Image (cartoon, rainbow, N blue to C red):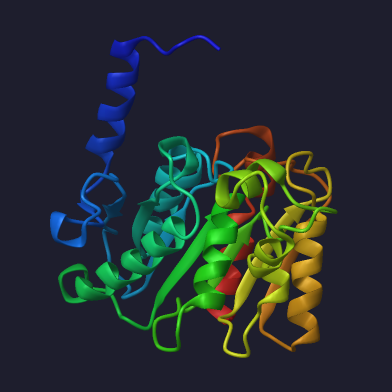
Length: 268
């Protein structure tokens, strides 16, 4: 793989930073985690609605697709009145594994609640959306966080869900819990097996032609939600593949899947 020229990489990073309103470090020296660079990138809507979203880009828990599964998503949520926060959580590329990612999510929700007055956010109206491995992280927030600290809703777009051998996305699993993980560890992080009675409303989206993460991940999640009589919406598409986020491509131009999500957010 060719390396990106340093000057082009610097310009790209500069463009991202200039687009955002502000960025917040998740951890400080007092926390003992000040060197991990986990951040929240805050994007303010022109007209606040009191609603907010934390956005978890995908990247197999190894890296992060910050542009089309982060920045572009934040800009769209801004357009419908949401304060948007892109979560740059810790990943395996930098030597981090479970539970670092979930710790970052917990911290992000705490920070957004702490700045709610400054950012015009209702503490009870903070949702989480995640793409691919980020979808797994969003689901963990809904399932594992204690009562009163859960997000108001969870959206999982072409998500990693299960750690079981039959359908797991193995790169995500390896990045999350290691190559030689035990069956107990696989079970503990297979989200279809851990849906609490107080799971927030869940939006799931997947395409049958997804060649990266087996669509059965989404199907087993929907089945588990149905069995528990939990509130969910399953936008099951025939085409679209994987990793489209909010890219400017032919699929998004004709499908505009976010309009389905927007409708669900109004009626969930």
